[in-house]
Image (cartoon, rainbow, N blue to C red):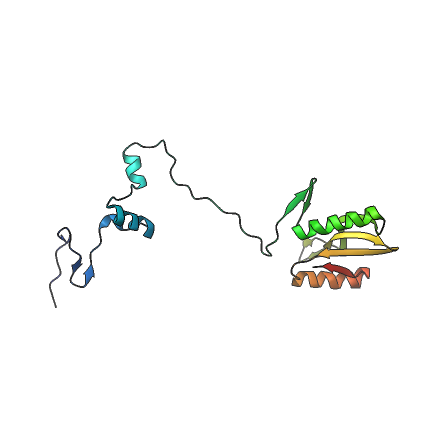
Length: 178
């Protein structure tokens, strides 16, 4: 067993290996690969934020991370047209189709975001729970029959339960537009 070197270990400039350990320049520790590669190619170390603060160069704003918007779970894009907000582009295009059908006279009474109560509010363990509701994307009348439409990309478990309750409570079938 060999004797350990005294601390701090002094390594001559340009030494690459000490025993089995590789020697790195202190200035490269904590830098990204791109910064290290730039320093290797140019021979000049990039400034750090500390160097800029120490030199008094405070005119330039320091790096601030930018938060990116979280992507929607089902990859839908909320959009707006004439002050009307839609949950997806597909829902907006279906709205345009239904407006055209209403103008021609195929359907009547077109409404958006119609609320149906599936179960009334209750008190559970002395806490009031709100009523269970289903919000239909579109409701209109075609040939004297009420039609309830929902534009769907992915059918979730919650939607399956609400679809079942709509049929059992209101005796209404939901037309799913894919």
